[in-house]
Image 1 (cartoon, rainbow, N blue to C red):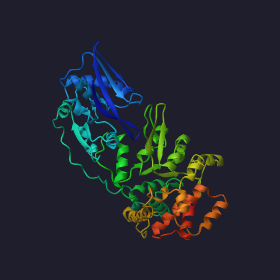
Image 2 (cartoon, rainbow, N blue to C red):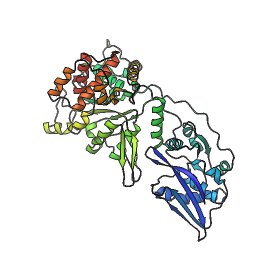
Image 3 (cartoon, one colour):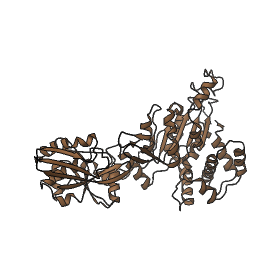
Image 4 (cartoon, rainbow, N blue to C red):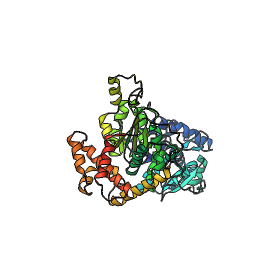
Length: 503
């Protein structure tokens, strides 16, 4: 018997798996046990062809391959290389002691070539936390594996190279790690927007405090353009945030060779299924758009056109910052701390709030259309902005130049730094993350709370809404460089929360 080690990914959590190979007397047959999925069950055929193509012998008696712990469902093709290594170790082709001290990841082709696999970064991060310090991965993913500090990584291109490495020889040369790649200024830029000062202000406040945002108005007024400028004014990712983002994207991409510097941006189409939005899969669910937007922006254009199930599925992630997907065999957990931006028209034809328009929608149709974005979802949105149609042409010879994203981003960064200093002894980084209990008991009480009390007495704010007004007031104060929100800041925050018409 021989043993190799690989990694099973349960969402973002990694578990080290023992791949055991045993040969005994009997007619030639290969059996795989340990709850493998269809792709993993076929690994024995891929591995057999790869071993023979590499000039080695496949056992000519009973061969049993066991994946331990046997009660844990296994999925994916990244076990191929570990299975082949364990089989070769039963024949003394490779050193068993060296094999048992290393994590092996990689998919095998029939000719013995080693192919890239998904999830190398989170797999090695999890293995490192359990005390493993050595790994063998596909040579094409050495850059990704090298992002894990404290892990000695070797790359192989072919099964024959794996045999050489496990017998003490060298593997593929480790490439020089590239620094985080900055794609440059996000496009479009705020300078592309003419007019709409209130919409730009709402976007700046949302960026400064990482608040959720809802744009409402007729077609063509600039909702999508303004919302798509949000990534261009967000601060760059911290090293820990960049590692989180890269680990999530590693689960859906096979090449992640650098840490991102800018927040991710996801904008799924309104026809997106529930599984593509929040994640899904038959046995082990994969991350969806809300997890790919972790530490970044999730933009839902034409929000009422999304299915009711898809919209309502956002309720828990918006509050908790994670998504738990349950399946019959297990539940997996993915991070989902995204900044939500919604954009919607006032009615199906989009012309209900346009002066002088010929809206053909009935009052019931307008009401039904607006109800597609439910009250519980809107209650979780911090800032609501109604954008009015234009009152004059955008082409004016004396129109002042608009601020570009770099100028606004500098103010946002300064506000974020004020929040970081105020919250330095807490697990939170921005105002939007601060829980209500901390707002009320640990931070100074904003001035002018009577304005909020009046809105509560009129039924205009829920208990959650009160906390969100206070959070936005703190963000407005941070943008103004004030240590404590004043009456003016609270009034502005309440107006942003209630979605007063802007233009």
